[in-house]
Image (cartoon, rainbow, N blue to C red):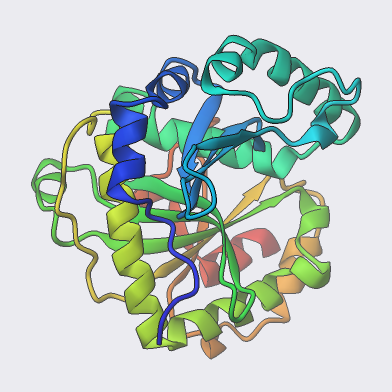
Length: 305
């Protein structure tokens, strides 16, 4: 079986970002904590507040240039160039950001913005990131065959000295973010997400290929300097054969609401053969730590008290 979508980019595209014509755009990301760059196979996206600031398309048979696009829906006043060259894109980032700020004020996307903050805290926050136990490898992944989607794909890599030196025993974590209690039901609800995940994980060939792709994405992001403390490294990381962890992040849950508890209590957790966890914050931070992960059954009991 061949997966229809890979996230890793070509070596030529990676080198163009690291050393070539696109280097100034990568430098903007590395020097601006409000931006993150994600690999999209035939493209890369630079995100701001969870929205795509620029999409940079790889060269192809029809176009021998790296094409940059800005989503015009963010440009209410229609004054910005939707296809800037590299120089204009770099110079005009503040204006593109301002347009997106205005759009997000009227059309807030808190969940995606929150995801980007989680990514920054665990990947690019100095000593804090190096002390957390998860690296965020990808965001907003969607499988084209069974429509399962993951808000974030992470590598669990314990931060204690001996484990952090071992690059051959990382494990996969698939993370779903629910921002506010109203996000837990409906068509994108918890049970549907678990059913989709089960379908994805049960397909061992697909899962194997997905793991291999994510290993390459991690390696490329390290080389591009997108992982704090791992800049420039070419880790030959490998994921273990363990079943992936599934982690729910229930952001800004209202303690007085029974909605999450009621939904979880109606789900037969034993139907799912993988470990399901709920993440707790380390007081008010966004770092993901093994010790703050709660088994979902214990989480349900905690909500019931």
